[in-house]
Amino acid sequence: MQKQEIVQFLMERVKAMSTKPQAVETMTEATEISGLGIDSVTLINLVVEIEQKFDIFLEDDEMTVERFNSVQDIAALISEKISVSS
Image (cartoon, rainbow, N blue to C red; front, side, top):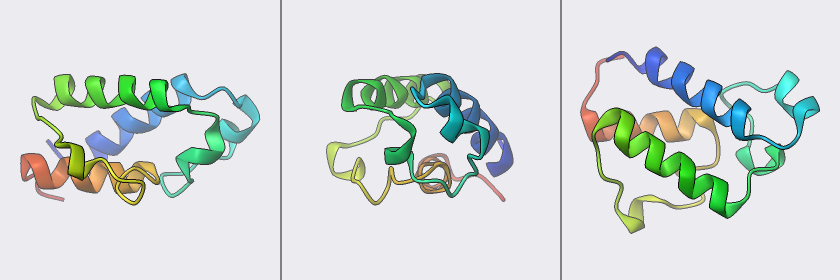
């Protein structure tokens, strides 16, 4: 799986989970997720979807604010876990 496919999946899911439609309109892969109205419960749901979609397990110490700051940060983490080529 290419990194762009990971980014596309994440963009779709984060946009669907956002409670701030106006923020989603200008969202890029570098947009901070914290500004999109995604709470901790929703973020856990996103983690579950990621683990199922990419058949990976994210350790507690991998789920840091820095790693989950933006779609591009999450995509980088997933890429590391599944060793994709860019």
